[in-house]
Image (cartoon, rainbow over all chains, first blue to last red):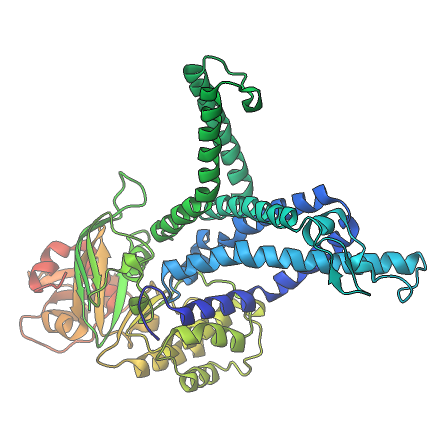
Length: 266
Length: 281
């Protein structure tokens, strides 16, 4: 085994460790998610909220073992670099979690619709399979798909990709914040991160308002009401800054979390 | 192999736990790490393992800085803490998950050690076992990793009487000239016949770090019926058999080391004992 800074073999061992140790927990967790999705499959706001909130809890609790004196010792003594351990945490809380959410949503939607059809005595064979009865989110994500034709009609394809991309970016941002909170706070990581981020947002908002007053002279500003060229330019600047922050914040939180992990003592 | 240079450590800013610790630990020995409660024995082990970082000074382990936790070092250190992690795994799964991280791990040795500890099945779930059984599994695993450094914090706690003997045999058989085993313990009687070097911590520093042969070469341990005033006596304590004494071994007499007596002597009169040794501390 190579002992360099990054080794895929060691990372695969870390993944295997995670799945072997938490197999039962994962199965129960995703099983519950399928059942929940069966019931809320047509409520887009609830689905989005569930993905974000449950994801935040998952991310915040992912690294909780490092705060326990006994489990923390075992974790840090595993012969792998902190970078490898942290990349595993990022991949598990962002990519894996998101894909599992989509998969369990599809399964929950399928099972929920099948159950609904059974209870309502709808003949499966004479109708499209229940899964493809579009829920609001499904419509947004996948469009209307019909089993009999097996085609994807591609209506508003660009809009759907854009929606999914935005959804995933917001998800990544939230996950990165809560993953950092998970390694930073010793107890009640999810709640502490929630309160901390709210306080920081409030402070940033106050700072933003103060800056607006200093620059523009008033606090009640709506970009779309701007008419002068200067104001439009300012609007673009703000929008670009926000866009850059939106893309840079997840990597920033991941890097900060990595350094926090390397500094962690047990 | 392990080198501490002017190491300070504290959990709280104004309360030093380790103060200006200098220490050199060589391979080929089983070191007993002794000290009163709160002297920093576990902390010392954690500094070696890279679980804690020194506030001042430097720790060097096999030319690595442990606080950086490089895999090249971690795969050659196994740390058995006093409180054991909870693994919801069978023994076989535990081996499957953790053994690949250690390139010198021997399944044959692991199986042999488990058998000796009377752990008959690898299908047993670790979280359903008693404290002592879990400890046996982790001791067996730690020995089977064949890491160059094996750190054990109170390893005999929770072991039944026959297992303590088995533990001593296993540890003794696993030692070679390249391996360094450090055992922190209060149960000195359990390890009396096992350890061949002693590190004593007192007053937040290492006050003695010597091989047992060197200790018995310079100190004489004996029991006398009547205590006579003698300038060579460093420490004495009364018992039912008479008066136990630790004195300077000026005549190079043979005596059997009594670790408990040595520990009490060092704590009571380190000013007289330390100069006798060309200490590695």
